[in-house]
Length: 457
Ligand SMILES: Cc1ncc(COP(=O)(O)O)c(C=O)c1O
Image (tube, rainbow, N blue to C red; front, side, top):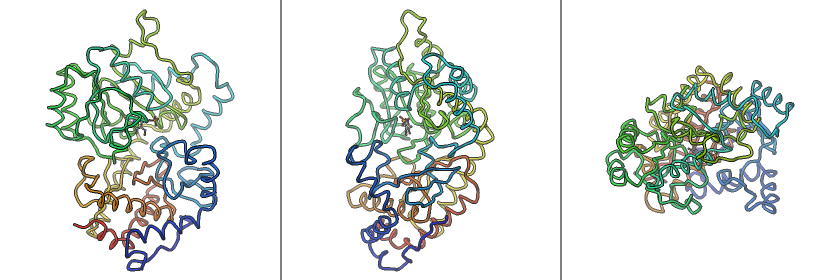
């Protein structure tokens, strides 16, 4: 990228100590981004912490974007970045995708607040059904959170004798569905049963023990926020088997993972949930959510039925999301495009892990296809617990390394999440991932000794 910058060389003072390295990297970051720094101060007068979406907060202050084109972002200080975050998966199409933009502009010209069914929503529903065969009927919402809220509320209402829902530790299903400690104060207040992700026998036993209390089991087939931890086929297969045996609807939250094959992670795994929830890119870059699945469940929302379940939402069928989403799914994110971007992601993930392994350093990348997460860890990461070290000292070191990596990557012109999360967008090329791999190599060379010292064997 154009804004590469000299970083402290291996063996320099800045690499002697993690806290010292972070202080220097932060000072450098502050000096390069004065406008982003003042925007935070100004915004904090009107919004708590200058923030309206927790995940966009990172220290010392987040970069503020002036705009994007393709998979490039420019910040308000005039620097350019390769966008590896892809708006936490909602930005699959990149910035300014012309087919989607044309569809959205046409929709704007036609009118956006028409107050009735429009000419796009049923076509988008048909396109989603065609790609995800488990979806026999679906309804739209405004976000993935809302899709999960509606799906789970409906399943509880349809089975009042079974009020509980089973979810999994470190799972994330939206702003009121956090399953990691310290983040769950605002959770949807029901009596959750929380199992251990990828623990086949432990979770089977828990599920069996409580089967008669459960209105649903909800799971991400790959935990996204939890660190791109793929559910093993044995684990997800066990859930399918046990839910079928106990007549419990199995909900796959594919808000993030529906992009991982032409027919989602469910298609790739060959496991069919009863209900699927969607979100992110499927709205073509504007707000979106949907839930759908078995006709016998979804038909309860048919307002012609005397006992219909209600489902309101002023913007459920907002024309921008419906028109943009339809153009995107049918013309841009074709099955071929899905295969290409996921193969590129597989290549990047393997390459990053190889770079660290070659140097014997404690870094690895997990994930599937176009979604990956970098972890600083010596042990193999197969469950979310593996990526969360025990004890405050190890936790502090991990937080520090993730921060240093994030600041160093930004310095080299690569934007990703502080937690090491990457979501490739369709404009990403082979040359882009080569450039990023070179930047990571440079990080490993410059900071390798620091990594070794911070994560002792
Ligand atoms: C798996 C999963 N479910 C649900 C959501 C919530 O979606 P939204 O942010 O659109 O409410 C997210 C968002 O990151 C997610 O990753």
